[in-house]
Length: 103
Image 1 (cartoon, one colour):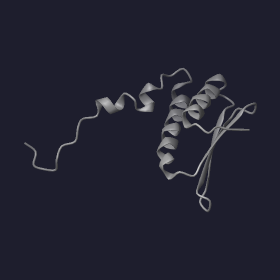
Image 2: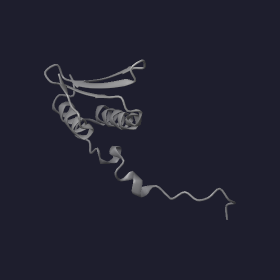
Image 3: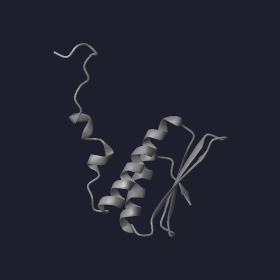
Image 4: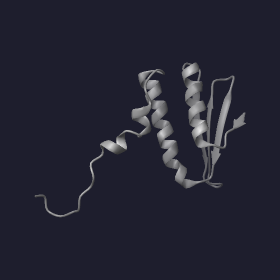
């Protein structure tokens, strides 16, 4: 088992692992409330990747990883992940206006 310290490396290697063998790859989340630790594990029974954190702010990152895996599982391993990662979505969102009357 390999604990990866960099989030970006963990995501990249996890996606590569899934694309190499989508039928046997699985993704597990484990949260211990008493310790406040979150462990994410991606394995295909030959290679096991783990990421451990105790930072609450990384929950959003975990949600993005979930969306990546849901997309890969639903659309197939060859799908373009740029629309899921949110890099292009930030440009397309309109700016928010005040709470005043509509004109």
